[in-house]
Image 1 (cartoon, rainbow, N blue to C red):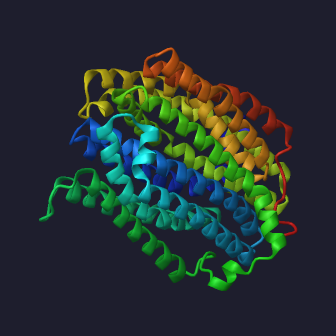
Image 2 (cartoon, rainbow, N blue to C red; image 1 turned 180 degrees about the horizontal axis):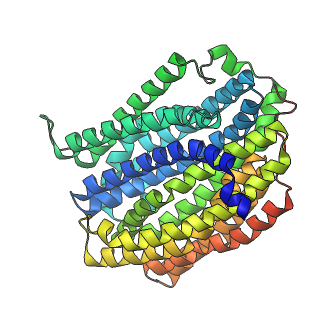
Length: 453
């Protein structure tokens, strides 16, 4: 325990990586909160419409995260060897894979928005408004796929400040355009949810332009030529996907399960959807520091494994497993104390306010387990290429516990939304047991890049 507290080198590296990533995640979560707040000013129905429409985007981004999280594991280990060519090959694979996913999701959202909305909602007004939003925002999906790759892979090379600064600018652009288009300023007519969608597309274009300009102007490790990105041998491709395919499957299966949660919540009524939507925004902001630390964890462990320092990697992993839940306990207390103030900002009914308060309290209780699982699956196991175990953990938790409880609790027993949320959240307890066993076994430590190039 003493080494955990006084290891200056560990905390210096952690702080340097985690702080910019946490700030970037905070900005992204703040953007969602700003969207919800602004749209909330025009009523609960628009909140529900945009929240449910964004379930499609949520599913899409988790697939992107799977692709690029797998790429990040390779990039961190390549970076420890200063293998720039290897990093640029990884970038090429991530861009192509993410682009294919973006095209598929864009086609669905542009041509079949009502059919997709019907999956998540039963209120006709929610479906109509959500369809309007979805058809427009779909044009940002391909742009998002490209920026995702540059953002995550830059972090893996220690360049965490660039994505943070670009996110700050994107937040400012999106907030200003939201205010302009949703409510009608600077000569524009009020456009409501359509305005929010247009603002998102423009902000994404600005974000991509900034990424490409800075990456190539600074000649970073990702400043690849087209030839460097496609000069990939079949052996390299096989080695990459042998590990990464399980990360993609992990995110997709987990995302599909959480999408089914949304379907169950959507069938419980508009108030349930609004309560979950608002609580999710609070949850996202509470989690930003932990997403930052888990990303830093993956990079630090990946670097040490790439160097061949497996003993040090295991030591770092144990520290992250202790630090995470302790910080989560503190964050849980803060969330509960501040929740009345946060909820008072929203224009919501008393029932929604009370339900949201209870959901946030349950989230605070489960947070230490949730953070431990995040660090284990995303930070520790993936850094060592142990992606199959992470897939098994998440899939079992979601599909054996979360999904059945969501539908039984919400649609069979007709329990209140906060009790359904509590039942669904119990999956985190199950996953924590198996995650701890795997961490201590050391079976997750693998050098991924020894024979790649």
